[in-house]
Image (cartoon, rainbow, N blue to C red; front, side):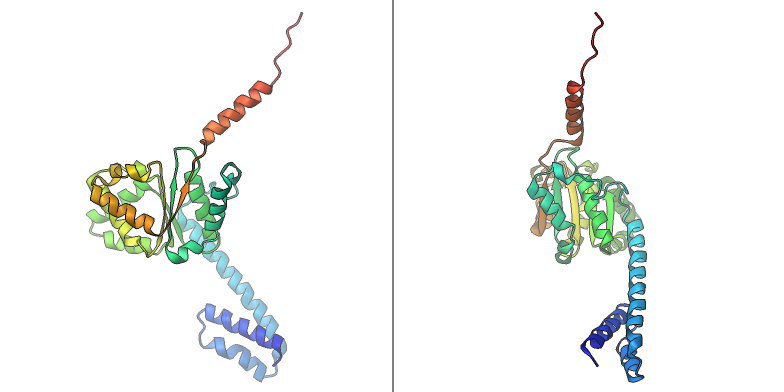
Length: 263
């Protein structure tokens, strides 16, 4: 068997194992070669590649639907050019998805309107396109879902379901109503995902203000310790989009020549 034939045979076996055809995987190429049908191997390889691509596309469609991401907030609509170079580069790096393998958290801080949520959603979309499972939830909505599950004695089941997502995006954590019950279920979620699955949390509040969310100093310290231990912190120290738009509009208006008066 030539080197090229061995390479094609190896790809065929790998594809069949990918499809969980564990009996066919070691036998397909071997049987064709034994029957002196080596010329059929590239055709089989091509068909299996088409099947793999089709399966990947179907998976991405399912993941995109399940993610509940705002459809318009993608990398294509996010203006990385308005961010400092180091922040833009860090976002590009995160979009490759390697941090998910280590259950690293991403924490996005900044004032309202600076692009934290858009960046979080854009990262989510980029990861879905690579075949990763993502779920987007505004913090207030996620907390209400957790509270409802707790009331119905289904919180462990919901936490197991959420654990199936490689990345859980919790948007605007500062906007939960901050009751003790909400703080408790939110802490439970953070503790469950610690060193297991990644969280992406956006917040208008810096860590020193998180006691407004978790109420008690000990609970606040414990929550911060868990999300920070393995984390990447993104600080959006930039003007808000609305400020930029207003400044651009004012600049355009100032350059517009006025009407000449008729003498």
